[in-house]
Amino acid sequence: MSREIVARGRAPVVKYRDAAGRFHEGVLERVADEDLLGGVPVREFRWFKGRRFYSGWYWSATTGSLVAYESRLELARILLADFDSEVTAIAAQPFLLTGFDGDRQRNHVPDLLLCTVSGLVTVVDVKPRHRLDDPEVRAVFRWTERTVAARGWGFEVWSGADAVVLENVRFLAGYRRSHTVDNVLLPLALDAAHRSDTISEVEHALRSAASAVTARPVILHLLWTGVLVTDLSTPLTGCSRIWVGGEGAVR
Image (cartoon, rainbow, N blue to C red; front, side):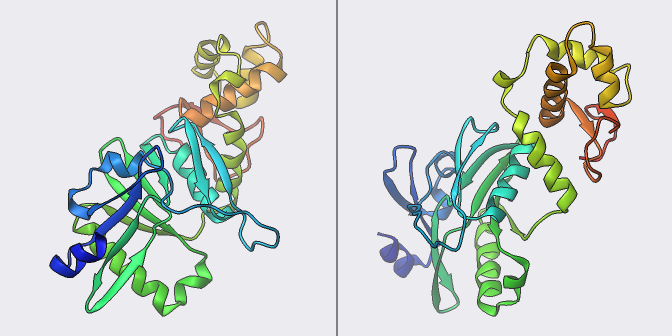
């Protein structure tokens, strides 16, 4: 079907899988965003001894489900998307895009598809920085950007983030599940944060209700959700300054 559509009208086509794993095809401009964001990866993942890349599944607090990744670099981008309070949907390897780049037909599977609260959909390709010098890689990305822009989507090439920021987000991700913290303490911690400057000060304010061992995961969960914010450009410690969300911290 995709070859017939492309040959007849040269319109870009997507092949994707729904949540049940069934394949579908359609012209890019006519396929609903939610169908692409709600499906499973268009290609099967394989694990075998000696494989060069590290693949796996990440449980996303944003989607409440597993998101596949094919490398540690992809996992890092998914972590940042999951941490971003503006992101409402994350799909991995969401579709196979087929279309013409001049007289050449191209086929490309983007790494991620993200949607934000504003409704903006962004196609993300994750690629190590040294691969960006490859002329063919650049050509594929230029074609992909032009093609999805015609649909009204954004396009991003991502090659990494500040190491300290990423490590902090990776650490906070350990506290992303609400059922792993004492939810009774959440409003108490938030109230204490209004009267405190650092993580340790919030813990101290909660000392009559909980030990530091119990209180700190609650504070870290609030940092993950964005209810509390801090400067993630420096390593997190008990002395890290915190703010109640929206009060000017660097995320």
